[in-house]
Length: 203
Image (cartoon, rainbow, N blue to C red; front, side, top):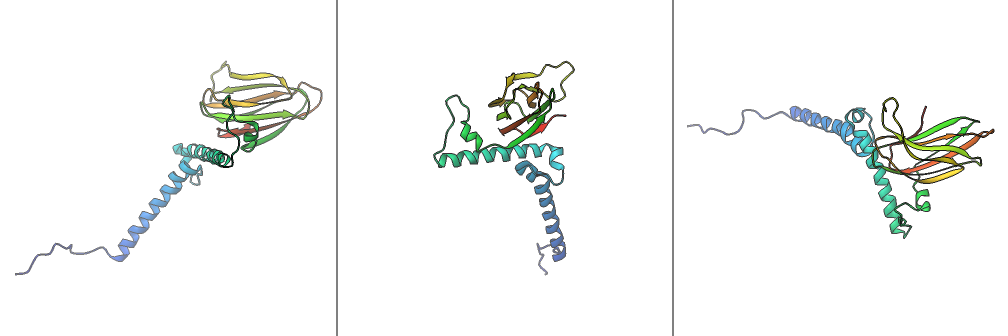
């Protein structure tokens, strides 16, 4: 009597196995490029990260990782630590500036530079003119504010320079408006660092 066999009648061919392996590799590559890369590195070559909201998260992770690495290197070298009031010392900030922008204000012209920030994110800044005083107003606005909305004011006055920290009271754009009330052109240079997505001039 012939014995029965538990083996299948036919095994997948080498070509079928190769195709299945290639398909699996393709799916894995798409997941890495379309999901992992935007979420972890803030890079979005396919545009899927922006749709899924992953690219912004990735950029924040990269920024925080860079700051953490800078802090560790500073600690290892015996560098400065945070001051008593919780702020970052000026020399530590200077080594961690992310952006710098210079604008020229003609007489009576106003210009606004702002940071895109999430609620409770903390940025540090320093700005100065090339000598003349300007009116400034540091404030924040949420996305698409309703008509008549009053922006949150952090500080305002007249000065040739200012520096400090800015903690976002809500998601939105937070930054500075300057107006040149003198009869000559004035240059304003702003440096920023800390937790934010982008620095840009508002139009």
